[in-house]
Length: 266
Ligand code: SF4
Image 1 (cartoon, rainbow, N blue to C red):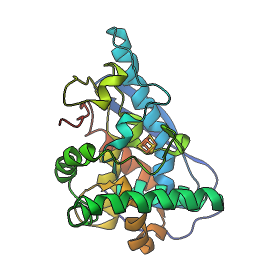
Image 2 (image 1 turned 90 degrees about the horizontal axis):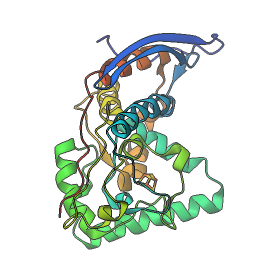
Image 3 (image 1 turned 45 degrees about the vertical axis):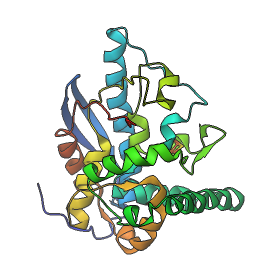
Image 4 (image 1 turned 60 degrees about the vertical axis):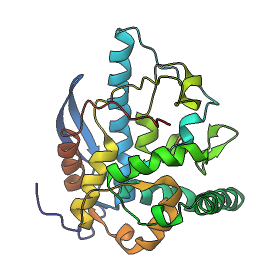
């Protein structure tokens, strides 16, 4: 793995492509990936990587369909949006950018839902447990079991639909089920069959974030994404060579394939 270095400004460079070959449990992905010119922030890299995630998810969904298991997630079902959605640090910056770009009214309403979610967490004694910033995936999963029981909706859930659907993070893209959609609202009594992913962009972006920011790979619960991004805003402004980040990300992605997503078990 090359050493991580911020890029000097390289504006004005022409388009570049990166040849990739990524092995997944469902086959290999080969092709040329468009590389944004010059340097990018981690937020921008995360956004560019969503196209790769769509490809990975598509492969997993197609493989399930071949076995007769069809995705049952439905528009208007927000059951999984009451889980503690894990974000890589790069995606926490991306989500902060999404909120910053909202029109004033929408931004105000969204910030209000973030504040209400945090207040509810604190009222249930989660304040001290969940304010640690980036945590390990194991810690977040443990926290997630208790979190789901609280029924606190993601601040982006509006009328049981995702209000940032095109900009949703990788954890949301990768969490799909083939069991009846109604089961997701009652995980204590109903079995949930999730689609095994061809790779985890959340995990790969967490590793990439750790490579450039330092420290161990970790994730941040969605409800704390904005305050984490604010606390780390200097790091969020740092720019890195886009080709270096994408090449490193593809390398990390190759180490994350074929996992079934854990659903909360009450
Ligand atoms: S970002 Fe959208 S899809 Fe993801 S948990 Fe929030 S509302 Fe649900």
